[in-house]
Image (cartoon, rainbow, N blue to C red; front, side, top):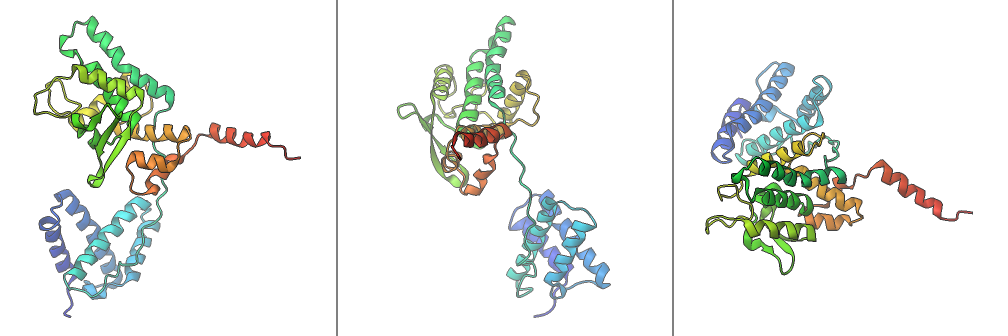
Length: 314
């Protein structure tokens, strides 16, 4: 097998990302940047331009150690670099340029998992009261164009916070997905996986109140529509949540539709719901994704430990 220059393989790889993978220019640049930096490091150490068969697993490990120790790369950035190198060499194997990838057994560093941002019960109550407060203000200002929107906004916030829907699941929710006889909604989640989510009375009443006044062209099936009767966009939902977070005076930053999903999961966990049931409601394919919600407040931990005092140990 003739030796293939690293630079030639990188040129072909970028074309592959563009044509076959249809990646954006920004993503392609990120891949190429990582690989060019790796090649530069190899050249500085070896004083020559590499061919693919020159590169060994030790070269990759040495480069990653350089990034970690000398450049202070965080684990998330290291993981991205590893992903770029791994995909590149997999492409080279697929093209027959090398027999085996030197990155095949390079593992990602362990990334410390951040606790999710969520609203506590009092904050969520303030958020859900915000549409009614804004309605009073608009009525005082005689804003006719505002009619029916408080019912929609309240229902939207309630559905996000009390069903755990993803943003795309909310905007994709259609009238036929709501079943008031069985009190549930049908959701098409990631990977086109369908799940049924039961509704509590708060969600049922909020949806009923909104759908009673909802107006839209017959061909628009979306549950949540904008003031023009069109399907509510994802960005429109994000802006709505941001507005009511400000309106409710919540000082916690970064509250978004996804953070309301965090809130839903956290409230379930605090209420004693089993993690497997939370997993099913959220539509997680792996329990690992759900375990991030098992964080518990120090107050609850102290309370749990104090329960042991109720046992007679003598």
